[in-house]
Amino acid sequence: MVACSSPLTNFRNLEFAQDIEDKHLDILKNKGISDKSLQMVGDNYQCFELLDIIRCIKITDGGLQHIMAKCSGVKSLNLDTLSRY
Image (cartoon, rainbow, N blue to C red):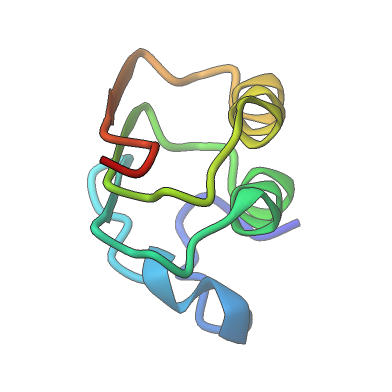
């Protein structure tokens, strides 16, 4: 497990999550992000409190359930346009 203060630089597939600052993770307009991506974040970094997922059309309820189960400290969740429009 990655410590909360450590960047996710050791995880090539988690490059989208490199800018986690102030316990805030933004995943914006990234068509490559999938449930597997969310599972990797949830399994390796549980300390963020704010999560914004916007225009990530490969994410399903299953991916969201996994990250929310692993990251119980999330206080704010912003979901927008998670399906094709």
